[in-house]
Image (cartoon, rainbow, N blue to C red; front, side, top):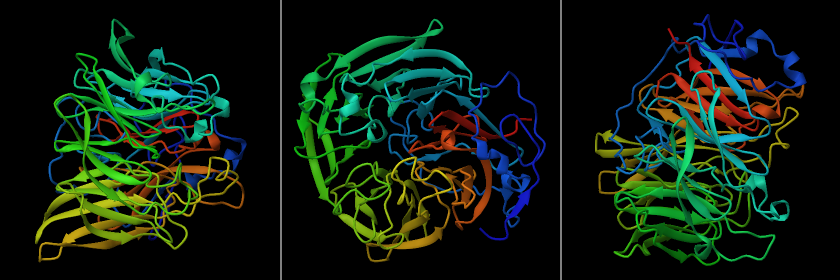
Length: 518
């Protein structure tokens, strides 16, 4: 960041802001507590702004339209990665750093990862503790609880399962809202629940049991249903950690599946009009379903999975949910000494170009890539944003003032004039966004990270950080809190549909960061 200037602190409800702000309507929820090291925080640390960028700076980005899956909630409202293409971009503006307010809700040791929004702007989120998850309805401003629904707990021998709670992405960590404003949630008991909100409470509409469509394991091992999403025809797809890919006819309840033997599927997957894109720890696939609903492989792309689980990764192999952008799909591999950002053709799975990123022996990402496509001088140009998660083994390794290696890179695929593409690194930021799924507002042109710098005084200061898409410069950052309770531990940044608002799940609940309302 160039010539960064600290702005003086004006106290507000949870932490502070960059200037005076409008008062809240309603009483905020109980905030996430700071740790004892908060006493080391100075006014200059609260809100930091780059003076080379005007207050309220925004830079609207031209882009190709992102299609709407007709069976999912409106883009930007319904799943962890915002839309069926999993672009991690929003049409709505995010915070631009004007009179920033920070509010949080303390949920104990429970992380609220995916945050979605209904037509009234209320938050639907699943918060998971070590034993099990809960679906919550929250007020988007105060973060107060409006309704709760207890989901099935972990299996009885979960404490001895080789995939422990901190590396288990199942049980509702990924969920989505459908076009009828119902939550589609996979559970720890090998089912998919469809849940609506009516009559002032959550109600179970239907449940599909998948016991015959998971990989059998001897206890304490246990296959885990990771994610479920409807395709563009309304057929519900699901994946399991140990390699099952399946479909559910939501009317008849018929289930069909195929096993990717010996492979793991850790992340969610991506739905295009042309098929379903699934990343295992060995291979990248595109599927379609035949007339009976049986999953069929269209093509497969074998990538470099590396020689082991890198520091910062949950398992070996790619940590990315595929990102569809125009005619391309972007992924990252797990190669050594440096991981690669790779662009692949959606039509046949052939590689277009690749770019190694970050430093030798210190590069990996367990997060989806932000994706953007736009008209260029010689055709469609493609951009992705990738962050470096290397050095984050668990939340203890970055405590006591420690941090990860850091780095955020923009890579573009540019037409070469002869029908091919060249991959280029446009910029490289040194921001340390340890494990968040970064997001970008197409309206403001800002990339939103969740960062933490190393400190000798053992202070763990967590920041909501905005970076300019064009330059890679940090525009502003605001302190959200201090201590392990403010660690996001792989949860994403989410932008709210009301504009000017972001949310981040942490180990102790959920945080809201927003430009003050008028």
